[in-house]
Length: 97
Length: 299
Length: 83
Image 1 (tube, each protein chain N blue to C red):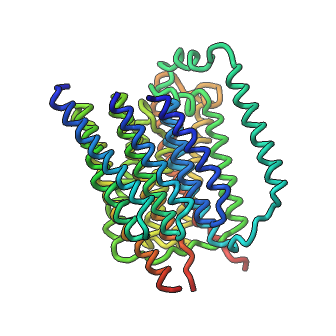
Image 2: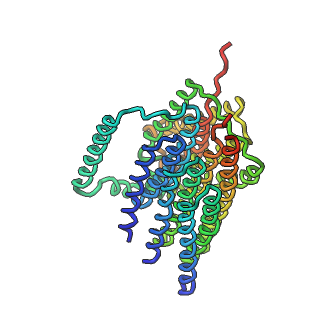
Image 3: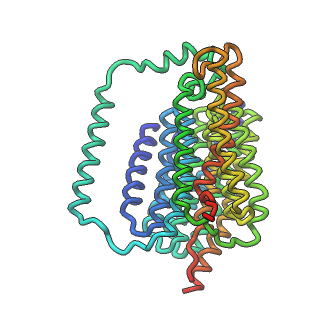
């Protein structure tokens, strides 16, 4: 595994973990459900994509790219859809009060 | 650094479990249960048991969470604490004593474990290279057969109780593209887990739970309403697993004289056939446990 | 090593969903805490797989990702309709 690939992988993974931590902070401290949903979807899409790409660079093998690519697609898609559905649920509950 | 990880994970599991038990809101308790299941699955990975982690995540966290949610919707809201604090204190004391006894037993256990050496001796002749699959479907196949029978008994109980079919909330137009990607991916992952269970962590139970998850997405998204016809197909599929396994057991007895002793050299095909039937059957059984089995009205 | 420290950070992010789970005044808060925990677990597994150089862990992460999608959907779809 070349040093360039190692450094690139480490940078990507660190950036992804940073996104994840900031999103966790947002979920904890933001004042409203809608703003927390904003923070959460950033973790799902940007955070996990960077972590998965970094991990692919770190292992240096091409066949891990399939599993990690599917991970990215699955978590990104389900995170975005869940954000929409949770917001929809919340709105329907607060509207009927 | 790994020690810090394990300690943080342990504290997290305890804390989540305490929060789950102490919460008044029922939905909150179920969410806490799911999060605790995820953390426990992570701890299984740390203990070097990825098969158990997969099963815990799929069945323990995912499907059991859905089942609990479905039932909690039919109960009255929590009004007040049911038991007085003194009762809870005694129960906490008993639980702590049990945990302490367990910790003491693990701490004072001596000698090497016998089982891994025995399994690795016979692994080459078992037809697969994953020791967990070899134990589940070759060395202790009788136990697995009885487990499937237990699942089937649970299904019969559900049929007797005959709960109402769950009515999912209408979720809008985004569900169709979502389901179009998730459901085939779940089916693909189920087949992948089934096939690779011979050499790396995977196997029939995890694949069946994955497939059940995909079918649950169909049901919850409103695409496959549980009509009686569909559910009777599901019931037949649930029977298939137990039937195939029992037939394989009897067939092995006919061929080699001992129950569930696969003929030499063909163990791999027997195991794969039984696992394929088990996957479909477990998926059907878990889905039927979720949506209830139809009862024909008495004439 | 740095990767083990990163795994600790992702675990911390996963556990940071707990305050929202306990406090969250509405049910939507608790559901999104579960979603964060699911994503955090997937991330932890991926980082652990990269740290131990065990690509088998990535398959486990994929299964966790699929099941967290199913669980989230169950939470949203089985809400009791307020009449």
